[in-house]
Image 1 (cartoon, rainbow, N blue to C red):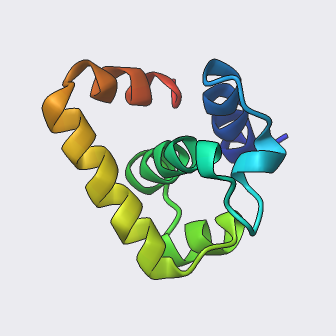
Image 2: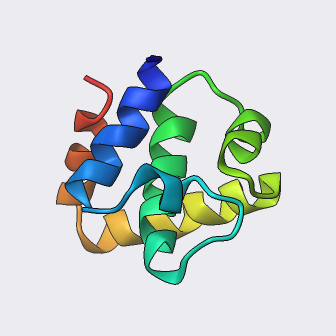
Length: 90
């Protein structure tokens, strides 16, 4: 299992949602937030490009940029979230 897979599994586990529902092509509404968190962590804390992340997550590469904006806004409102997201890559 790769480090990327481990990160994805940890996030999904913490948010009580199966990896398959987050990493699928058709986003399930309640998985969208977790999907954005996964994308954010992969973008900022791995060496993957937004194009590779988009391919892995079955979304358009512009969607990764949008996820980044959504999570960045959430972090502005809840600064503790940033520490939590960083903890997934330790």
